[in-house]
Amino acid sequence: MTSVTTKDGVRIFYKDWGPKSAQPIVFHHGWPLCADDWDTQMLHFVGKGYRVIAHDRRGHGRSSQVGGSHDMDHYAADAAAVVDHLDLRNAIHVGHSTGGGEAVRYVSRYGRGRVAKLVLISAVPPLMLKTEGNPGGLPIDILDDLRRQLAANRAQFYFDFASGPFYGYNRPGAKASQAVIWNWWRQGMMGGAKAHYDGIKAFSETDFTEDLKSIAVPTLVLHGGDDQIVPVADSAPLSAKLLKNSTLKIHEGLPHGICTTHASIVNAELSAFIAA
Image (cartoon, rainbow, N blue to C red; front, side, top):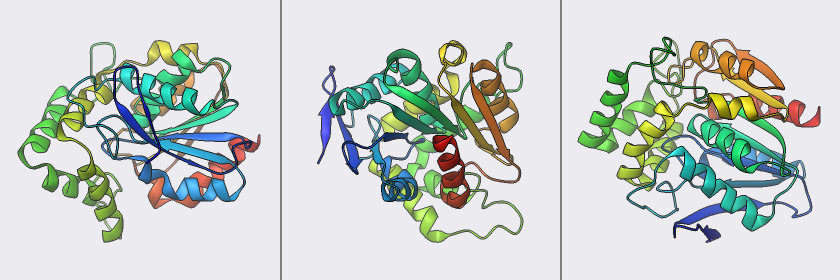
């Protein structure tokens, strides 16, 4: 397997497809998934002549199932280790959900001179948790309930999560794909329970406000209007305002997992933004 070992001894698995001389697109996956969640986008863009790269976050997929350091600082450093190992330059970084937070922190801390553009899809920034300064965020009780369900029966929790709100399959008239549900479940169960448990805190309680303010590269902020996981009102428009050079696109009625359910829309948006 292709992998790089970080400074703290964690093996990070990655995929690297396409011509090494082509412009790279780096994909950052959501919780609790792995690089496989980007298959549709990676096949599309490698077919267009780009170099496409995606890694499994520490504790997820095929990367080391370490017991600690599951936080955004380490996630960003791990992404940087992959980028440095492959010496990627003029790269477009694309992050979905938790991966959006990881991509924001990576670009803010490590991206100088290496990043051409950034894309945030259904992303967690600026801050998911409800606080005095973020009254529109999610109450801690909801996040505690996610942790409770994960600890009690991770397999059932993941099946229910994919069958319901992640893809909007709980909406009236929605046609659920069992293959999509089971593929989400497969990816989740590949990773470690401890990493996923700690990851809930990482994606929900990390404040990306200062990271966003520091980013100057052109950034596409793309979100579904019916996102039940990262509600749009407290995420995409707020991130777009904090960024120096942003384009905000909200697709009404679309769910959190739009890279799968509406891949043609996402791929078209990415293609137009990259080409602009």
